[in-house]
Length: 96
Image (cartoon, rainbow, N blue to C red):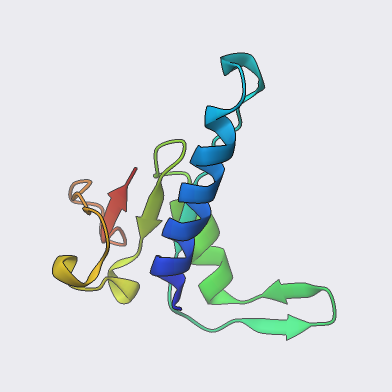
C-alpha cells in the first residue's frame, strides 16, 4: 500500500473510532503526503520529504489529507474523491 492509500485508510479508521465518541472527545487529524527524501535514524525520520509533508498537512481540513504535486496520482486511481484546493504551488489536492 502506498502513502496516499495508507493515509486514506488511517483517516477512515479514525473516523470510525470518532463516531463512537461524543463530540467533545473526538480528535481529527490532518495528514500531509509528499514523495521526497527521508532519512531514518533510530527513532527519528527527517529530510525534505518529511519537512514538506509536515508543512502541507496544515492545509488539509481536520480529518483530511493534503497531497503535494510531486506525490499526486490520477484521481481515478484514488479511492474516494480528491478536490483541488486552489493555486498553491506545492499543493496537489486535499481530501476530507
